[in-house]
Image 1 (tube, rainbow, N blue to C red):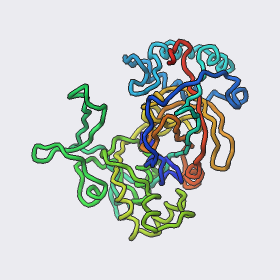
Image 2: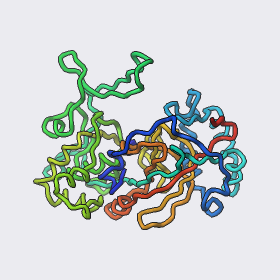
Image 3: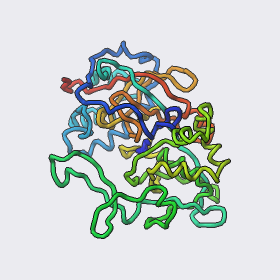
Image 4: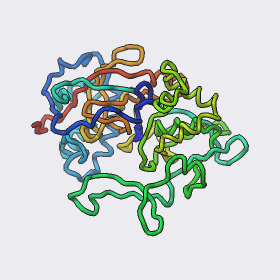
Length: 383
């Protein structure tokens, strides 16, 4: 969830919405292999109705786009005009005919990198925290909105020959400098709105890694917290930090165990948490799920975070991988989110859903090899 994403290798804390140790992939090494629907494992058995429901949300975002391609940042180019037409036609299709519609209008292509279709797939989820609108002895940890003094710029806005790179900072003495680190934000009042007060600092930290959360309020109501922005600093997974400092053993590096350790060791937790300089800001949202990078609410088991340099947001994908208990996952999903650790042509973060520690533990154990096909409109020119 843009997470901000925002993933979970060794668990979400080690890499997922976090860091990767592999070298960046090259656009030139990306290739698409034309395939048939009979090549897709479990195609006939998968009930794609929820995936189509998720895809229709993406269609709503695409219908007003004026760009030539549905995601201009992606190496794989899908015509916005083609998608608009298909999205419009899909409205009149009965659920029993969804597969017929896809088979008639889309062609599956196996995504390959350097001649191999194999990639890595992890999972993320929407966490929970307890919060209040008012500060008290119990609710004393601020959940910040986007700072008033934070400035974002893109180099290409000044010179088209420069990289398409987002920079985040602030102005000091008439000079543009990087924005505050996590440690600096923790140690001083921030020029930012406080949208809620939480009862636990670790829960805020986990929410920032995940990108969003459901807040259980004092009066029992539920409020969804969404991603707003981040401070532009590099992400480093808390699992990696704790292992490097020998504060936990390798067998303790699951998400659930790490969260438990952080809460049980408050005197030791702050320093390693601050070594992840990335800080995420949030906003209150009204939606039926967490909001992904495409600006639509995510659907459990049908939304995937991808590297948008390769896979366009809004694209239909056929995912083939395994879950945390080695169960097969062969299903239609939609590229609707990104993550700080989701880097590469064949890399995905599977949205598990919303819930507490039980969901966290299950999502955090997913770390599997797999592959995916991208479903492109028949009119798409594939080089």
